[in-house]
Every structure is written in structure tokens, then in C-alpha cells.
Amino acid sequence: MTEQFDVVVAGAGPAGAQCARDVAERGYDVLVLETEAEDEFPRQSNKSTGGTFPSMMASFNVPDDVVMQFTDSVVLESPNEHFVRDMAGAVLEFADFKQWLVDAGREAGAQYRFDARVSGPVLEGGEIVGVEYNGGEQVYGDIVVDATGPSAPLAQELGVANLERRNQAIGVEYEFEGVDLDHPDYADLTDAMMLRLDHELAPGGYSWIFHTGADTAKVGLCYIQNDEFRRHATADRTIDGYLDYWLERDPRFENAERIAGKQHRGSAHIQPPDSMSTANFMAIGDTVPTIDPLWGEGIHKCMESGRAAAITADRCLTPATPDTSAEEMAIYDELWHDRVAPKMRTRLLMTRLLYFAPNDRYDRLMRDLQRADDDTLARVNNGDKMAMRKMFHLSDLPMLAQFARQHVGS
Ligand SMILES: Cc1cc2nc3c(=O)[nH]c(=O)nc-3n(C[C@H](O)[C@H](O)[C@H](O)COP(=O)(O)OP(=O)(O)OC[C@H]3O[C@@H](n4cnc5c(N)ncnc54)[C@H](O)[C@@H]3O)c2cc1C
Image 1 (cartoon, rainbow, N blue to C red):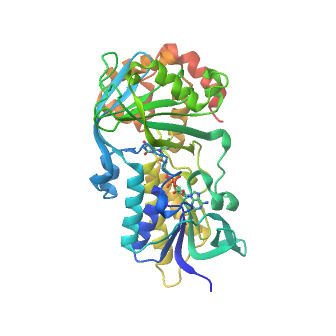
Image 2: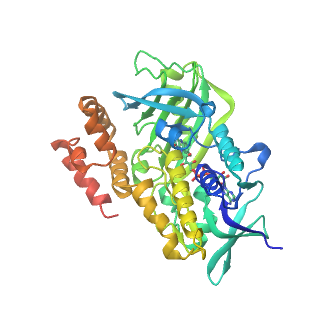
Image 3: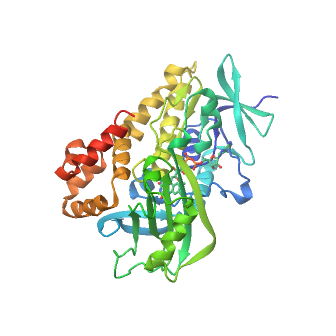
């Protein structure tokens, strides 16, 4: 007997689980296939620092009990300067958050099948009509959604996504106790999320300390192994080697100890999306990829993409004769560009420029940020070109020219 659902979702991350929750709330039959075992879920996929903001918590009705620590500032650090911005935030216990999303989806009527590793599409007439999982099992769906993050087995085979290794950012993080969060030589990181631009610690990327209560914090770093990385990298130092290097040198970690079992690592691609849909199919979350390239805010963006996919599924399946043709599914691409990640190309360019800049320019950036008003900062963060222009100096011209030669149009 073939099993048939309105919607089949591969992957129970923020994108897939939110998509299933929304689709189920609209009354459709939805099945989520998740590769990990239920009793240890999430294990390998427990990869995220979980830093987020009230807009995400409110949009998706996320309960406070999955929050480790509410924060009230974001701190940017460079090698010798820092900039503090008052901004409410929350550091999630990512595992609890993922489990809560599964429970909320089930309450809405979504079915979950764990220990179910999706390997590829079931095709009829060249179109996807279902998925294969666990080597030979099949399940059919009017609409199939790939939400497996960077593994993307369906999207890659359908030619919808083209995640390239050269654009893959890798990250590692440990949770620590005994961190000096208010060291006299640095900004006060109590109730703060701190991101540090410093090529010595994270070549071509950034590192972070997110306060998680008392003297505990999540400490990690990420980078892409691209030209910027190679320009600043130390031969043979691994990503764990970079973290150790930072831990050994920064006095805030003098008495810090790793908390057993609290290690997170993962990856996401930083690249412009290709198409995201085809007949009967959508790719969401980091399968696209959807993560904000500049600061790695992926949870909110990926959940928004899940919501856009659910809206599209509803629209395609509602008519008496459902229409899941490529043209109708492309509504999702429009929603993604309009609502989920507007100005993605500008943000990618800003990201490349930011990580292209040398360490001494980061110090100057912090001083400029300290002087800028809130409106300019918000506009810069939203990719407003006029506001961005204000952040440049005449002395930046050689750097901008070099950047243009290497990156513009690439
Ligand atoms: C180290 C690190 C720190 C981060 N910190 C933050 C942060 O502070 N704030 C923030 O907003 N974002 C952060 N992010 C980004 C954020 O975690 C991701 O953007 C987000 O988790 C992506 O959601 P997703 O649902 O698209 O994919 P994923 O979270 O990757 O979920 C994919 C799901 O699919 C499952 N799966 C994979 N392959 C298969 C398969 N073949 N079959 C079935 N199931 C499968 C996986 O087990 C997983 O459950 C961080 C990422 C990393 C790596």
C-alpha cells in the first residue's frame, strides 16, 4: 500500500518543523521525516548557539521556557575597540526549542517519523511525487519540502539548489562555566550577545561569547575557507585549534571550564540562492540557503521560509482541482525574496566587504559605530546604500578598489 500525504517534509529543523506546524494548522495531512532517533533528538543537529530576538519569539509564539538567558545588549568587538547597542534578545536552549517545535507541530496534527533518513526523490514523468527513505521505503506527497539544511538530498538531485563547498561556513562552539563576563579590559558581557571581528581568532569570519546565565557562556567561532580565510590563516590550524588559541590568550577564559557534553558544531552555505521550487516541490531553510549571511541569524529566517512554504502549499492545494505546477509553486520564490530575505544580494556584498577588511579597519569601524545615530545603524543593517556610504572614509579607497577587483560581479 502506498502512503500518501498532502505534504511531506524532510527534516525537523526550525524550517521544516515550522512549515509542518503551519501546514497542519491549516488542516492538511503532513508527515515529517527526520533522520535522527527520537530518544536522542536533537543530537548532531543540536548545532546552533540559539541567539534570537523578540520579533522571532512573538511571530512564532515561542514560550519563555526554551530560553536559557534573556539579553539586553548586542556587543561588537574588534581587536582593540568595542561597540555596545541596547537591544533585547534571547539565547535559546536550541535542543529544547527544537523539541518544542516538534511538540507544537504534533499538537496541530502533524505526524513525525524519526529514524527516517531521506535519500532521494520518487519521480514520475520527471516530477517529484514522493521521497525514498531508509534505503527502499517510500512515501508520497502532493507537495514535498526539502528542509534538511545543508545536506539537501532532494533539492540537489532535482537541480533546485546548488550548494557549493567553497561557500560553506563552518562553526564550532562550546559552553563554558567560570567565564569572566565583566573583565576590566573589555565591554561588560553580562546579559549580552557579543560578536568579535578579529582575523587572528577567526580568519575571514567572527567569534562570539553569548551569556547564558551566572558565569556561563556559549563561546565559538565560524569562518568560510575562502580567499579571506587564506589571507589571514595560520597554516595547519583547525577550527578547534583557533578556538583553543583564543581560549589560551583571552583573560576572560582564565578560569573557564568546558561544560561536559555541551558542544555544538555545524555548517551553512553563504551564497545567493538559485531557484527554490519546481513542480510539487519547495526547498526551505538552509537548504536554499536562507541564513542571513552577515551575522548568521538563521533560526528566524529559516522559520519564515517554512511559513512562506506553508502559505504556498495552502494556496496550491485549496482549489477543488489543486495546482502544484512549477508556475504555482514559484509563488514561494516570490514570498522568499519579498518577505523572508529581501536585499539578499546587497547583504551578501556587505558580508564579503566586512570580512575582506583588515583588523585595523575593524577598530575604526567600532569608533564609527560609536558615533553613528540609531537611525543610521538601522539603515546600514538593512543594506541602505546611502547609509553605508556614510561609513566609508577616503582612506578606504584602496581597499574598496581591491575588493571591487576581486569580488564585484563574482
Ligand atoms: C555553530 C552554529 C551557530 C549558530 N548560531 C545561530 C544563532 O545564534 N542564531 C541563529 O539565528 N542562527 C544560528 N545558526 C544558524 C541556524 O542554526 C540555522 O540557520 C538553522 O538551524 C537552519 O535551520 P534549518 O531547519 O534550515 O536546517 P537544520 O537546522 O540544519 O535542520 C535540518 C534537519 O534535517 C535533518 N536532516 C538532515 N538530513 C536529513 C535527511 N537526509 N533525512 C531526514 N532528515 C534530515 C537534521 O537532522 C535536522 O533536524 C547557527 C549555526 C551554526 C552551525
